[in-house]
Image (cartoon, rainbow, N blue to C red; front, side):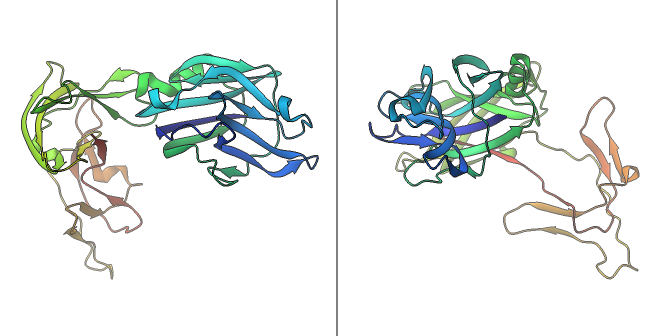
Length: 302
């Protein structure tokens, strides 16, 4: 069994007598203890798993001999637990970090804080469980250089000190460990709350941007919303069927999201730019089961 997850903001380490658990089985093994597949042990901050069949309390925790140190792992991190033969391997941000010379196989019934006061992470963005054993190369591919392997995502790095104003951030767009070109990212795509955006400069290949902002100094929490991959229309046509009772619709909702009714299974309604997945024209059809929104924001807090 292999599990993949991305978490933002590890919680503070548990007390020396407690643990943090992400995966747990449904029932106790041999009436002794639950199997737990990703555990942070408070007394030494090692990650590993708990073998519920083990009667000896001291031997029940199977350590990877890697100390996670939650204080050093703030921000998005990628963890993989990999069962391979008689061993359980652990990876952090695509890198092998340690292994337990044992392996347990039972059900994964609970994900999260299932046993009370064992909360592992504040946010989980992508969680997967595989029925096959992944290779080390597979783990690296899934991590994708920090961008993942599904959609284009964004990495945000601060390029100013805590005392400097305005604040400067570098934005990188990528997928599958490669940078992705984003044309004409401008202030209209981003929302800073509270504060103002001063300046935006792009790299020559349009894969990274540097922005300068002035956050509201009277506030302690600020959010910068950035779309992972902005979509720009050169021409948008709507197909409204007067014979259809619903008739189609075109509306701006109160949260400024653009909603369209369309038939996503009909490729004839979509025209893309040559050599790109960017949409050039879109003929609207009636199918309220499919909704398109104008942006998919990425949130960065500081």
